[in-house]
Amino acid sequence: MTSAQGVDVIVNGWNPLYPDWAKMVPDLHRQVIEAASASGSTVIVPGNVYVFGAETPGPWSASTPHMATNPLGRIRIDMEEAYRASSVRTIVLRAGDFIDTTASGNWFDQVMSKQLARGRFVYPGNPEIPHAWAYLPDLARAAVALAEMRAELPRFSDVPFAGYTLTGNDLMRGLSRATGKELTLKRMQWWPLRLARPFWRLAPHLLEMRYLWDVPHRLDGSFFDELVGDFQSTDLEVALSTSIPPILQPADGLSPNRPLKAEVVTQVH
Image (cartoon, rainbow, N blue to C red; front, side, top):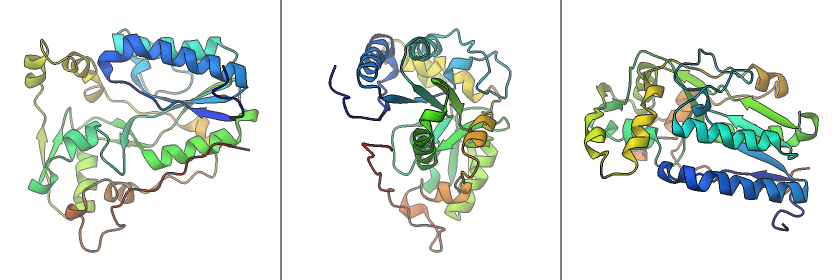
C-alpha cells in the first residue's frame, strides 16, 4: 500500500456510527495497519473508556485490565489488540467524553447543553458520581506532544489522558459560571430510548453504554504526566466558555466562543 508513503504519523480519528462498528471497525483498522506497516508510519488511535467495562474498579490506567463484555467494548478491545499484535508503532491516547469547541453530536452538545438557554442542565446519569471528560483542543495538543516523542516510546503505548474528572453537579456549576446563568439540573429520561429500541438502530447501543453514567470512574494520567511533564491543561471554566453558544455567554465572558482553528500536520519531525 502506498497511501501512507512519506507520512510520519497517521492519526486515525475515523469513527462510524455505533450500529456500523461490528462491520466497519475491524476492516478500517486492518487497512490502517497495512498502510502503516508498509510506510513505517506511527499510528495514533484516539482510545476511549469502553474497554474497561462496568465491573472494572478504577482509577483506569495503562495497566488496568480490559474487561468489557458488551459488544461495543469488545469491538474496541479487539481493535486495540490488532495494533498490539502488529509491528506498527502505535499510540493509544485514551480519553473520556469530549467537550468540544463546536457541536459534534456528542453527549455534551446534544443533551447537556441543549436547554441551557432555558436555565436547564440535562444530565443522563447520577449527578453525584465522577465521570471522565477531555477538552478536545487539549487532547489534540497531547497527541502532538506524543507524536514528537514517538521514537522514545514503547512500540505499543497505551496512554490515558486524565482530562477532567467531574460529577454532573460539578459540570453544572462550571456551566453556570461560564454562562452567568443559574441552572437547574434535570435528569434525562431513558424510557424513550427503550421505546425506540425496536425501530431506531442507534438506541440499543446508547442503552448498552448507559452504565458509564452510573459507574464512577476516572482516568489515571500519571503515565502521560511522566512523558509530558510540562503539559498545561486548559482551565475548566475557559474550556466550557468555548463550548457553549455565543448567545449564552456573559458580556464579560472569559473568551470569545469561536471555533478554534485546527492545524493539519502532515509531517512531525
